[in-house]
Image 1 (spheres, helix red, strand yellow):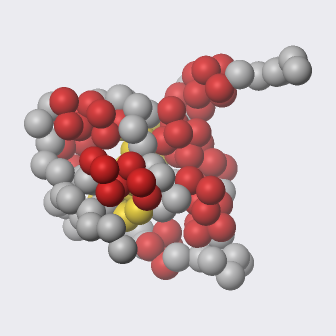
Image 2 (tube, helix red, strand yellow; image 1 turned 180 degrees about the horizontal axis):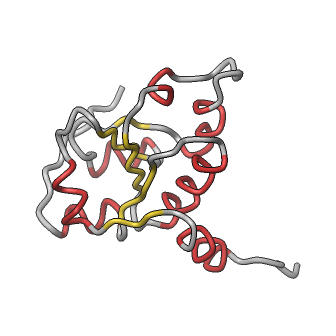
Length: 132
């Protein structure tokens, strides 16, 4: 099978149109009532590694459905006038997700360069997520 566009090119294209912030900048936003951190990782990653304190878990496969107010799966958090900081493990899924969120009309979105891995590496606080 010949792939027309690989994931690396897709991520590069997304990062050309979305704001990417480094982990130091992300840490300054943590705890702000004006900011919502969106964790796009699989729930097994959350159970294993934890998350940024207060982050909202949005499974990557549900993002578009949770953003769209016309969707039966819509989540009100996406109608709030907040800054949305997307992250995943390394920053690939979050770049693609931030691009999708922008295309869907969210205006103040960015993603964390290096993702949760960079967050932990910089000594960022981690909230454990108990298995349900």
